[in-house]
Image (tube, rainbow, N blue to C red; front, side, top):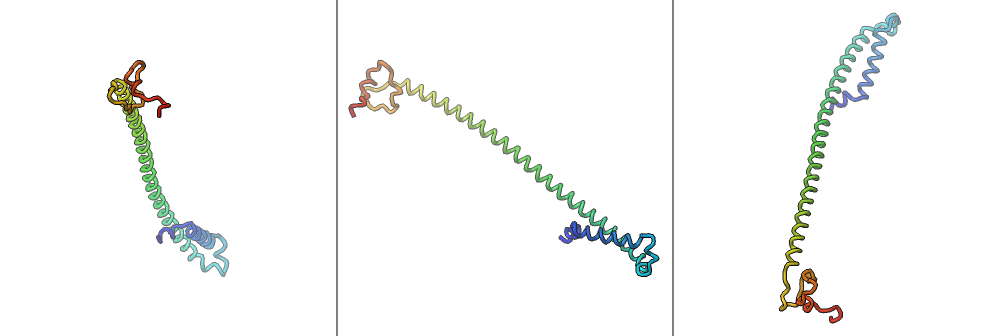
Length: 152
């Protein structure tokens, strides 16, 4: 937490401003002859070097921290892409399975319909649960067992 604050843009900008001021006072050619500033030239040079070292260290820390964050983000992104690929494959497999089940169900329905059509009606039973599926033209048992629409 403290390193995040120390390597923030604000702190680095303030250190850069301090570095610029110390460099101007320490190395500007004629300022050492000004009586009010001349005594501070050696201290300004020392401060400039120390601030340069601090900025270099903090920039290195910030760079390594950003690299670590980028690696974590890359790993997270790779995991998400893998999850998306697996989800797509699962959806394709589910669609193929649904199509196969539908085809099997249709085939079973056709087989059942063919079996029901092949059944013969019993003359003792007037009930036709198949709604005329077994009725064939010329089948006297089916015609007699089925009531007409107006007789109800």
